Length: 359
Image 1 (cartoon, rainbow, N blue to C red):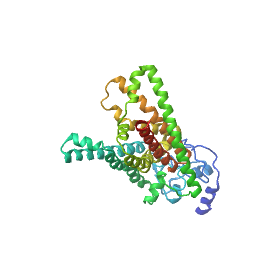
Image 2 (tube, helix red, strand yellow):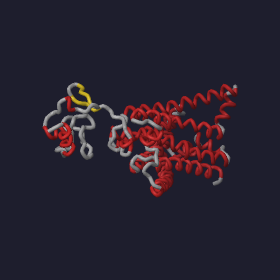
Image 3 (cartoon, rainbow, N blue to C red):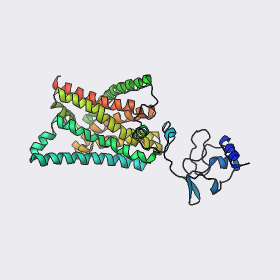
Image 4 (spheres, one colour):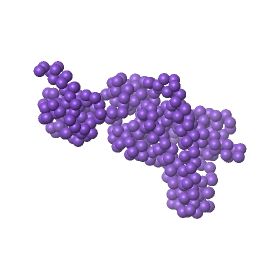
């Protein structure tokens, strides 16, 4: 039997086991799979010959390490991008590290902009007034695009053709494969879950306020819950035009950038390394913690810190879980998820504006 016939025989063979006989990794349900996704051993060879394959039978994309074959990481081609479900992609360390790097870069740039304003104005008071202006916040919101750009740059190393289109596809920011009806479905799902998100956060906030009031007393919890935060104060100082711009920014910039980083990159990597449950939960924890950094800065007292942390953490955690589950349900496509996040933010801003300015 020549080499070509032997290869054909291997491709037709059905594996006798569900787990790799060498490393014990579960074998994906892929037709004619030949190599273990973890250790890289030739499963088809062992299946037929019931022994380890000789080194020469290993693919040129494999190598031996301490006597065991290991599959070198393969860059994804166009066909791979059509089905990323069984692809390993980046590790858990890279998922968390790149996310932290993106957020740190955004914060450094934001601080740099503030320092420039202080330098140009010559007065901290004047700079503070300028920074508190709603239009400055609208302008500075474009800095959040860093959360989009950093993972976009990183994922190129996993692609055979790292053009913009393929980078967006691997992150789930694509309409490829969707017709008009399917695209409309994703949009409607995004709008519907945005409303669900608002109701969910209102419910969780109410429950936490009731529980904390029972534990710490009604007066202190009411004082913390009733006093406007930085975002609320910003909305209170907004006029109709700046409010419209804020709503647009939330949908186009904030929702899109944060979902590309947290769901399209972070959760996608964590699920492949830690599994669905822990991937979604850990992403929600990181998402919530990053949004609560201000709570950790100079707390008035331990009691105020604990109450502020719990009052804010669980609503963020709840909306992040909703977004994570929606992303997983939509087969790692970001269309519905980005719309949900952006419209949820927009609805929250509009509600706060109406409550404090009209009712």
